[in-house]
Length: 472
Image 1 (cartoon, rainbow, N blue to C red):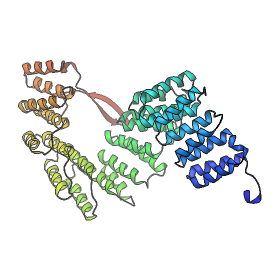
Image 2 (cartoon, helix red, strand yellow; image 1 turned 90 degrees about the vertical axis):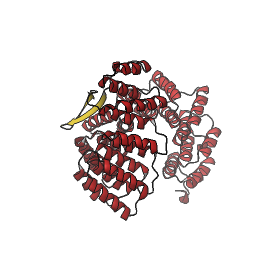
Image 3 (cartoon, rainbow, N blue to C red; image 1 turned 180 degrees about the vertical axis):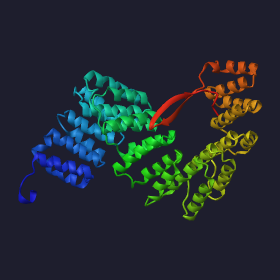
Image 4 (cartoon, one colour; image 1 turned 45 degrees about the vertical axis):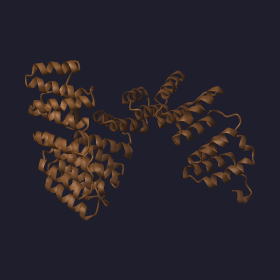
């Protein structure tokens, strides 16, 4: 256009600046800025806001702020562009400071600006400021705006307040893909697996398109509660979305099928992968361990060594946990030794905790206690509670009392220790001891020793409370 002697219009400049921001071409963006600076368009507030946005998206937040400070008669769009830039780069404190400045200049925020400031709060975990903004949003009548609701949901999830996020979700009249994705992912992130899957079913009924991040969260949720039929439905959406070639999705599919006991499907996904990494093999090994197929676990470990791949500490924690649940006592011990000798991994407290749980869960309480005396790391609360749980299961009162003493020393307020010890005393008819435990921490018999459990029947997930008698 300029080579023909034509001056670009405002619309042309806006389009060019947005393109520079989209591809992060800072050099070209600066050239366009220089051209605009010599025209009367430099005083145009939309041009100013777009320049700020371009600099922010190109990573030059300092140039964005320098321009912002030079612009006269800043309107809500200009303020919003600068706050959005700060929020995008995790400068939440700066975004909030700018919001306070704007209030002194009597500029009324709009839905986009509210969304940017809330993003800033989320980036630094400023829950109190976020709640104050939420109150202002309600007063100004923006609570039904999807863009604002989405950011509020994201803020509450970032701060771990999943129920408050769901309240915002339910109050929205309209929900877009981001709304569904943020809420489902939040549920999955905090292991609200049943809620995540129920919301997924609702999204399917509304033909909502879900992205890769949501599908990954759903697959993890299905694996956690072994919901194989819903997992297969999520797999269908993986194929529908064209994610079957994504290595992270395939690894999570293998993990989901393995934990759900469908090793044939897990292996089918594994065999169909063009590229397999350590996580792929780890997911397959954990699946075999969950299903107590030790021969396949060994075969996979040998193959990995032949491929010169290295498994990390988290992988061995997962395999040892699976061995514990699969009653593979001898095999778990061999794996622990192989982890140190063949893979040169120094055991962490998590590994020792798995080994103690493996031994004690399968009745080897004395061996578990001997192991505790020999480990080079101080046992944590998890280890003592695991051993106390097995003492309660097998009626070992003396060792259980010792475990309770250690648990009490590490955390006097841990309710699980009191409930387990109280039940151990009650089951052994040690009424005096039961009274002593009750005096230490209220009356644990008055508290429910129930836990949430799930079962999948006909593709539907049912939630129920387990009684304390079947707890192991």
